[in-house]
Length: 316
Length: 316
Image (cartoon, rainbow over all chains, first blue to last red; front, side, top):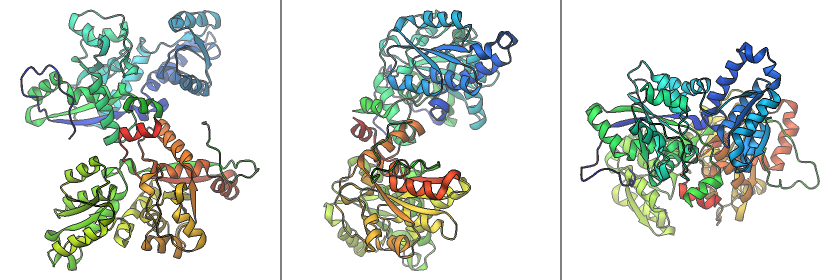
């Protein structure tokens, strides 16, 4: 079908030839272009049902988020639709079009130095009495992301497994919770470049990795797994395995999704397909476990927020 | 919303501000990535019902097409699914990935010098007794393309108008036929670069333009309107108007579709959106006719067969 980037870890064995039927959950078509809308909307809905928020004037005092990316727009939109003021703290490295998009959703955008996001957000919380809605390390946000997995299970019957990308871990933890009590196995996908596979490394050692500095092309996946997602992913053992892929494999999977699915996705979304197509460890496992029946495998395409210029840089 | 390429023909007037609700018919998600599958499948089905084809051994002798683009793959696929041999003549300027894709559909590909396509095809017809299925200048092909318009009318209620791209005119003529007897108005969209607006120019003078040589970025639209499409578009007056847009406007519309719809489309598809957003003549007309109620406007996104490398060239 395509020239396959060399599978890794194949030490002389024949490459596995698992039978896999792919089901794509297209979160690039979600509002704001990524799954993050789910967590933000759910967190806002929960706040509106929380007397400690509403009775203290929370609807007027508003919410605070910090993000250079999709969570910013997601929270801005969710707050706007409920008539709640939103304060979005964005680091000064944020691309101007993301700042503009967040402002278009009616948010108050506060630009701050890169490493002062959390303190800036904390100051606004103190000053305005607004409530912090974190990007992933919060149960309501995780449960919101879980709806992607629930929908996928309704839309694709008889899934054997789902792969979700893993950065802060909100989507992966939510997906795992959505499959709890079913026979569906859940796996996480990460870039391996410059240690971006913090989730996989933590999974292997049993200890959560708390810092990473990577410039992977999957720039939506540079975060480290948060404590609460980690408790779902690892401690509760709701995720069956973590797999990492190379930059070349991510790029090739992104290309396939663009050219064959005609879908614009950011490279972070394509890590799931890259694992399914190119990660030899994953493929050996599926071949062994699925046999001739094969697997129905859900892949969560987490988002499509890449600009045309960004695509040109990736493939130019 | 976005920086708008300067509207043309606006001689001092205020730009029109029509109210338009857009409905996209995503033929980029069609099999082989473009509407051409419709015409090819319909033509093959009709052949299978034609005793002059079947009783002369047509199912074994096969079909012949000439195309550097989407018709090649469409005919190859349609023939394959009916178990009919296909001979596809492709000019030597065809990109290798298109030749490879056509071969993957099981066709016999014959590469010939650029200007010998038709004679090469005619030779195969004579030699093999195979039947020619032309890319647009054939009633069955046009009626196949018409199903895109029929589906769009079922999917989007109460359309006021549809814009389709116009190259050889098969899609535009089919769309017009699909709207015959309804109140839905049909318009054609073309690039204006280097005379690629042959349909519009013919429409204005009443005489079909029979040759064009253009290097527009909308490389799916370099053909001239064929005789049979012309008879539908102009002589039967089933198309209400033709509009042309600049290269800059096509590029900006392509960018919007990529970034906002998260859909990969080739520039030829984006001419429809470019007319709706940037053609001042069109917009003045809609503003005047639609008033405050606005229009529900269908746009046929004709195809998505552009490679990642091609996108990089467009936006790099």
